[in-house]
Length: 322
Image 1: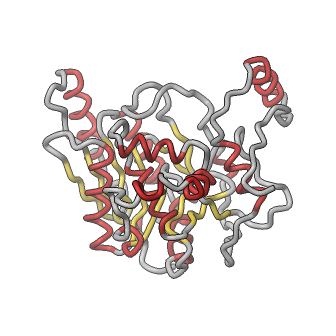
Image 2: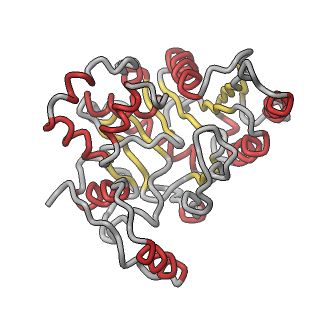
Image 3: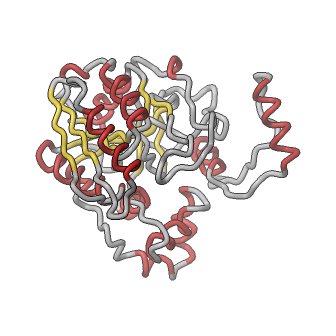
């Protein structure tokens, strides 16, 4: 394995969550050989005393002990917001080291996460068609991998922003102003191509342009599209998300749906040497982002079926490939 990617953890005001994230990270293979940057966002101008205390508690937690071989802590005096924090922090670190691996403050990891991430970053660095790697994927309840699929990773048209890595040459190609989107949105063929990532994607791009959301991840994903590139995702996740408990700025309350069984993560994954789109996986991924809601009676039956260990009978089968 080549030089290990530096790890970046972004945090704000959730001391319990970031402690779980760092504790799990410290138990990873290769953590004792890795450099860790921790970016702590600052308080908003109108932050209450309680909010300021949580931010102070986060800063106390991240200084609690030496989580990796080397730890560098960067504390913002004022609130930058998640998007600006990530864009600025990743830019600083990636221009020093050439590659990065990034976590947010609510991801508890498998002990194999760093090994997998570094293996993928080493392997795919010279692949022009790969723009990023991730240690996570859509929930198993929404997207199944075919039983006869022979690898432990797959090519995805959509990047996945909960535990991810990329390289300097890719990151520096991103146009954060989305200057090309005005031209794209006038062409329905391009919009259809964009929405192969999921039926919600073009509308999220429009929301970003209109200032209704502030998402670095949408712009990162658009860069994959512009440069005809994919993300490489694992068939089994290496992280479980503990942040959908109502405490996050950008996450609501969706308990259990994003929890993953980390005992299923693969220690020595079979990597994809030739990057190709498996039509079954692309269709399943697309279907998992199809926004049409199922009737409540179908959702109840799906829930009961999964509780009994059976496959959900009512799954929307919208397709990219016929």
